[in-house]
Image 1: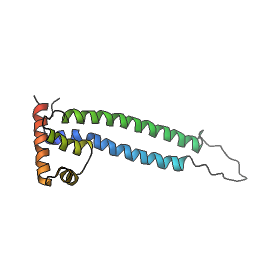
Image 2: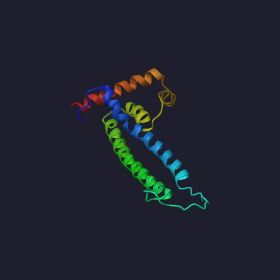
Image 3: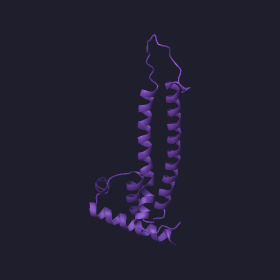
Image 4: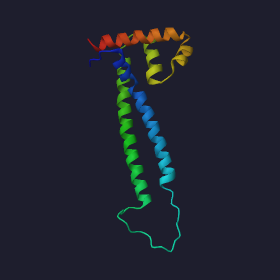
Length: 144
């Protein structure tokens, strides 16, 4: 695989993170849909019910929307798993364990730079320097 720029590499490394956020959002939508879409409130009226062009009831429509959303979530999760595997494959190109640790904390654990610096006992600037070095090594190895 040829990755030509640091920005392209960072985008590839962040893809699992982005998909994770999308999956979280879809789960939130699913919860809302399940809470509101499956609620059945009786309506008492002397007027005749039914009719119209729509052959499905609101609960049926909600069930279909829930099913489709669950399918979308499953597809995103599959994409996320593939992206996580690719992220680890790229990180595994590093020989230096310190560089690997920085990259895992950032791209697999999705930690902010400040938290990584504190956990590792380094300054924020030094963590960025290690990150930059790791990106350079990965770029060189990807383009061999």
